[in-house]
Amino acid sequence: MRKLDPLKAATETRVDALRRLFILGSAPALFLFAATRTAAASEDKVLIEEFNPAGESVGTKLVPKIVKSAAEWRMQLAPESYEVTRRAGTERAFTGAYWNQHGRGLYRCICCDAALFDSATKFESGTGWPSFWQPIAKTNVVESADHSFGFTRTAVSCRRCDAHLGHVFDDGPKPTGLRYCMNSAALRFVASAGA
Image 1 (cartoon, rainbow, N blue to C red):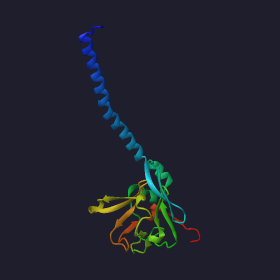
Image 2 (image 1 turned 90 degrees about the vertical axis):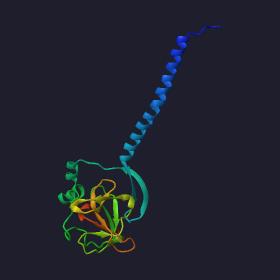
Image 3 (image 1 turned 180 degrees about the vertical axis):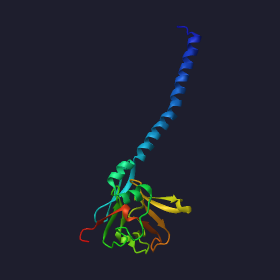
Image 4 (image 1 turned 45 degrees about the vertical axis):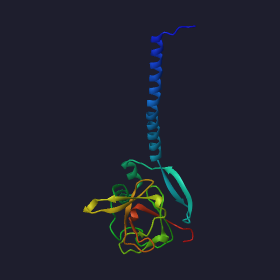
């Protein structure tokens, strides 16, 4: 029989214990690293409901979030559209292209072309801005608190590119009682075929 060296056995036991501790200790760190990478990757994509030219949903899709520099947005957009969508500006009432638009079609984001509103939900609010009682899909817009001008409003932005669109108020018509008061400069109207 081979005789074990007690010092060597104790050292090997400690090394094994340290190895296990390192592996177990690394597992949470690796999990945290993987979760962080997954979260970062998911922030690069957003879920958008897509619509065909007739305004019919063709389902939701995970699409890349659109992020550009200020210079890139300036090159893409007209000055007023840049001011409204990228700097949360507001066009003057009764001056936008769509406040008095009555055609049938979809209103898409001027920055990324995401479908935002259907003309079927547009109504005359008397405010001088295009107003809708609901977005075409709640998944396509983001609502957030806006504390500018000394009071709180609810700002509405495009989920895909973070373009500021306007604000939503609770003084709209039935069935929702909401008024999505949008800036024409943030939208692109696409008429339905035959409209």
